[in-house]
Length: 289
Image (tube, rainbow, N blue to C red):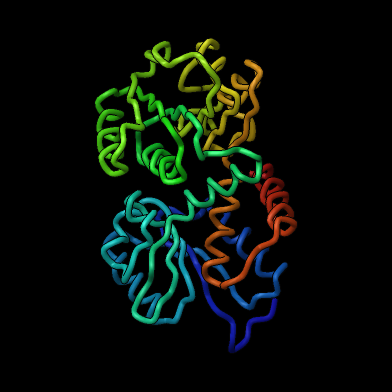
């Protein structure tokens, strides 16, 4: 790697950031595509967020990713926001413009792209989402944005699921999301669905946990997608496959949110071949953790 007078800087702002895999992905992509950039994490304290965004622009930083806890709180400091990111209410990618940064949500475009790579469709699909927190809300928005026909939103606290359903049904001007408590899945019509696990339950080191234990629930799934990528095979995924479905973890989402950001910053297209090679590098690195 050569650093010279034309090297551009990209990075990640968040707190904490020591666990991030983003430098691995972005620096591998730039080596494969021969792009003269460097990607590094920046630990930013809450009270310094506005200064960090303005300072990054003043320093001619090409682009930034944003991770927890700043994906929503960064929005007031942006020059512009992409419609999907605006609808979700969260930004994870900042793209430099002359006046400031434009915010995008490549978490969700990346999730959609990861699903497409596995042959999973959203257009016209009936979907079950587990959870009603920030991630689940973003996933529900993304599914409706890409024209899913119906979503059953299951959450331990029904009032939270109701809140998300009412908001997004109003936003999309159709009755598409149906909130249920976790124990009410028996009210879902018996057919096969795409089931998306959008909670943190089952995340390492609590890999023996899952949101719903009853095997009868998993009979509803033709495909299960867990946003968690560590462990590689979650209890949710095991139960999906035990019921005859196909399952995927969230590593593809992690990869493609970075690929989408990389493409936005550098105005390039990352080929499927390079993306899949990067996926293997990422997968091997996570196994070491």
